[in-house]
Length: 259
Length: 199
Image (cartoon, rainbow over all chains, first blue to last red; front, side, top):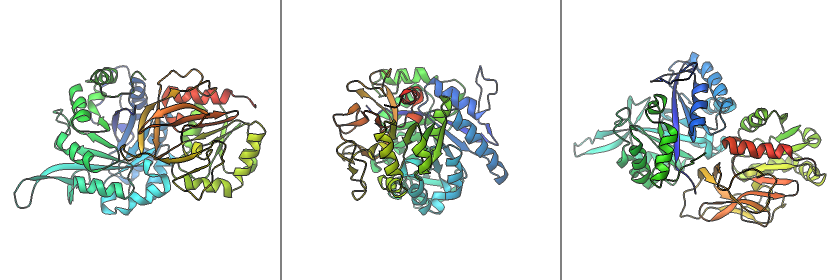
C-alpha cells in the first residue's frame, strides 16, 4: 500500500542549518549533510532543504551544500529557495537534488513550471505555496491568500486556484504551507489542506503547525494530505521519528515502518 | 565496469552515487563504444517514454540488444524498465525492446497520478535481483505509467490494481521503483545486480 510520507525540512543559510537545531550526539548540529543523514536513519521518508540565504554570493555555498547532502542520502531529496530560472534549477539538479521547489518565481512567471517539467519531468517539480488567511476586500469573510517572497507580498491569488493552475502547468507535487499555523505548534491548517487536496490530483505536502503526533494523524485522516513536513520539532527531538511512525501505524495510517 | 546509459533523461548522478557507495566502478556515458565494453549496463530513466527514442537514435539500442545476447546483465530503472516492454501508451509511436510482452499504461482514474512515494513489493517466485529482500519491503516510486503483470514479474505492487514493480528474465532485469532512492532495500537490490556474473 502507498504510504503517507513524513518529510523533514532543513532551513539553510550560508551552508548552515538555522532555525532551531539542538541535537544531542552530533559533532556539528548545524551541518545539513550530517543532520539529513541522521533523520534518514531515524526513518524520514524524504528530506527538503530550503535555502533561505538572500544574497547571490551565497548561492555557490548552497550548491556545495546540496552536493554534500545528496551524497549522504539514499532517499528523495528536494531543494528549494531562490530558484528563478531553468539554469538555477539545472545547477541544483546537477548538484544531486531529485526535485526542486519553486515558489515566488513560479508566480512571477508561471511558464517556468512547464519549462522545468519539460526538461526534468513533472515528478521533479514541486510548487511551494505559502498561504495566509486574509480578509476579503469587501470585508465579507476570509480567503486563502497566496503570498510570495517568503510571505511578504500579497499576490492576489487564492490557494486552490493557484494549486490547480500549478498542476495544469506541470507541477508534480504541491508543498502547502500555512503561514498562520507555521511555528505555532497548534496543528496543521486542516481546512486549507482539505480545500487544496480536494481540487488537485497530484500529491499535497502539508506544512506548518506540527506540534504533536496527533497533529500528523489529523492532517492525514482529516486533511487528506499525502505527506506532512516539519522542521524544528524533529531537530529539537520534541518528536522522535520512530515513535511518530509507530504511532501513526498503530492509528491505521499507512507508514513506511519499520523501514 | 558498469555503464549507466545517459540518453538525456534527467538526473543520473544519484544512480552513479549509489554504485560509488557500493564500491563499484561505474561511468555515466552516451558513447556506444563505451557501453559495448561494459560488464553491466544500467538504463536509468525519469520522465517521458518518448525520451527512450534517443537510445535508438544514438545506436545504443543495437548495442544493448547485442550485449544482452552476449549475456551481459542489463538493468532498466523506471522508464528504463518500461522500455524493456513492447511499448507505452505514453508515446505509442515509440517502440520498446519487446523483451517482455505488453504495453505500459496509465493508472485508473480512481487513484492519484503520478504514483509518488513509498510502496511495497509483493514477491512472486524466485529472483536473483530480489535475493535477501523481505516480503512487503518498501521502495520509492515516482511514475505516471505502469507495466502489466507478466510471467516474468518477480515483484508486484498494488496501486489502482497490481502492476509489475520488478521483472527478471535471464540476464535482463527491470525495476519500476528507484533503488538509488530506496534506502537500504534499494542498496541491497543494486548490490545483488552487481553480483550477477555474465550469464
